Length: 189
Image 1 (cartoon, rainbow, N blue to C red):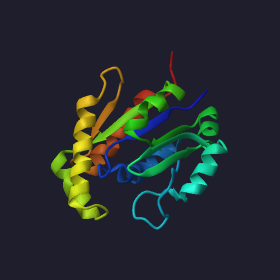
Image 2: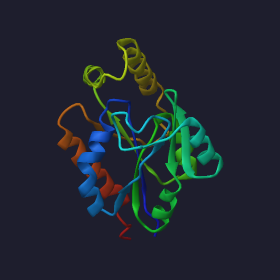
Image 3: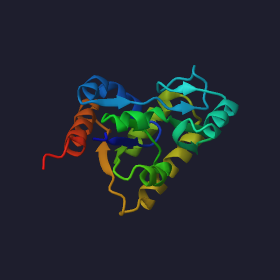
Image 4: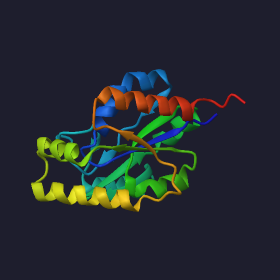
């Protein structure tokens, strides 16, 4: 039996990395792997546990067929290693830190994926982005505007599960784990 792809999305600063880290041990007990993204950002940058590569190395890997999924956003390139397909075929679930803009491409390749959108109130998001210190206030305003556009544009034909991460992280973890239990458990019929 194939595993389920859990496709986690959300704006930068919504807490995807914190959610993944907080749920890591419980996900392991649910037969769920967390795959590391390959990103054209230095490995020294603060943030997620990703594999940092140069743009040239990323393109070499992309052309070599090393990625199951690849996209560009915010001036960076992102790739999900093909190893994910092996895990899914082996019946393991896989959690991916995905992209809202790449959801349709991911659904075309993995039509049974579980799309999860991590949301956060704008004022909480602004504060988190300011604290993180990676961007100017103008860049943060642009991110918030992009987030608002995505909310307005979100198509109702895509079954996206929402998790609000404006409050306690433990609440978001519990929501994520419940979604996975309900949607990735073997069919009992």
